Length: 263
Image (cartoon, rainbow, N blue to C red; front, side, top):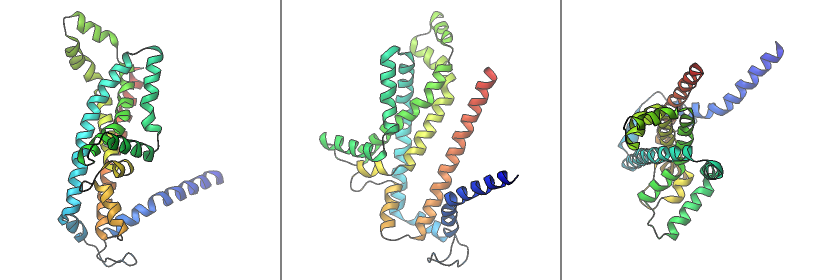
């Protein structure tokens, strides 16, 4: 009984230190006062001022566009790569899988500096395009790792049967394989979208003057002092990413339940 009580207290302390700062941030985003030392009434004015700030809105536009385009590109390329890797055999498959895991295991700062050096070496002007390419690059492994398990569960005889009935390989993949791996494809897209919105380190090294996402904008604003608008912006980002993670986890749970029923 005492042991159970101590475990609960320990768990509560851990979650308190993890989420108390975020809770304070959310509460003070509705504070009528600019001071962080006192509460001066409930208000939505910082959210209104946030959406009237052209600099932040431009960063929001860049963030959503880069997240959407990079996620779609990473999902398309990653799904095709997962199908190709699944059909590989022997040492070549192990080698490709190890290379695929490298961007996931690498620290973000290593990936960011490596991509920056690549763009400098290629004499590419750093801006929206280089930022987009960087986001596609670090999102790809997560899409592949989401789709590959679905490929392993796939019944290959269905694809062969479609070919025997006269379907072309492209048509068979589109009408037979893709619908069965679609849960993994959607999960990969959501993961890529979430990671793109959340990224700062790689974006910082691969963007150029005049182009920034929300993470870089928040960093720049925070260096001049924490404004109430930043609290509002961070609250919106936290809630958005939390909702996306809930959707991803819900999809993964449903996929696991389906697998258990099949078994």
